[in-house]
Amino acid sequence: MYSRLLLTFVIMFAGLFIPSLFAVLSVEQQSMLVELPSILFLLVIALSHFFKQGRSGFAALLMLVAYNLIQLRLQTPLAIGSTLLEYYFLVLLLPANLVLLLFLPERALFSFQALSYHAIFILQAAAYYWFIQPEQLPLVTHFLTAIEPWILALGDVSVLPNILLGLLICAVLTAAILMLFRDVGSDQAFLSALLACTLTVVEFEQPWISASMFMMSAVVLLLCILKRSHEQAFIDELTSIPGRRALNIDLAQLSGKYCIAMLDIDRFKKFNDTYGHDIGDTVLKMVAAQLTLVKGRGKVYRYGGEEFTIVFKGKSAADCVGYVDEIRLLIADYPFQIRQPIERRELQVDNTTVEVDKTVLVTISIGVAEGRSSMTSPEEVIKAADQLLYKAKEAGRNQVCA
Image 1 (cartoon, helix red, strand yellow):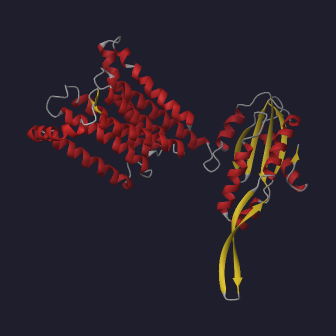
Image 2: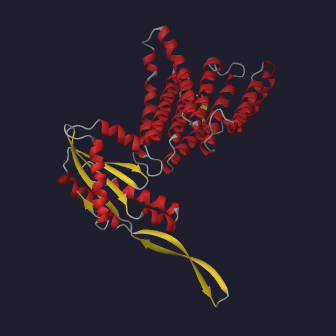
């Protein structure tokens, strides 16, 4: 989480150096780069629809609208007409909507469940459109005159009052804190969007700043979409380790000497029947977490159900027995506790239910087989390791057979 957070800040602040590159480009190249953020945001919206990542799609939609408002409405001095009010609208509404989406549940961008989200955005767009009409200019002028002493009370930073800058910083900090304390992939996209908004309005008078910052945000949004799509395809959702599809791809690329270990949780079905599937899922998570500690550069996969696979490249079966046996002992010694309800009778009248902590033993059986790309296929090695796994179970479980 910390690395993703730091990477997001580094990428977005690197965008501050892009405006200087615009000056050395031709007019045609500059025009193309100005259009690039819109194209990237549209691409993110399309991908978010196909990959069912509505939150990132909504973030891209908001950024697309905001960017085009900047290009079409805010390229004149802020003192002219309603430009200043439109600028304040942007500073307030864009981060407010992005923070709101951080707390709303995931919804497909083009779905019936997301109609309420679209209604909120449409109402804001209607209010914005009403304020920018020429006949509303006297009202806008009066409104700005009335709020100016309050909004500038804390001083001025560039063209952005400090009180608005404070709100933007609070929005950025909110996204950063959420990113640290919850595992939601789209939070990185929202953080990049809020940073783009903040850095744009702070440096608003710098040429090409909006194109640069919104382009960087679009790139982060696109990377988040692709990363989450990869995770959905190759990472097991329950255990957060690579799944069967990732294993099949990696097996096809094996070369030279390698070793495959097949692991199975002992008596897992009985455990599920006794304590319930929720506890069973917790056991799977615990075992997966312990397996990732395996030495020898072994890569762990969830093969299916309660079965796992570890692939050791460049290792023999003799090399790997010690590695997997160490993991076997680590899991067998793990103090796995569950809260189990127990009925208690008192005075033959009152029935109560109490919960007690119970420590249960979780063990695994392991089969280890060695392969060489010139002699055996990975499928044959897995089959051999599986047969050895069942030999380990027949021999009493909680042991390694190689």
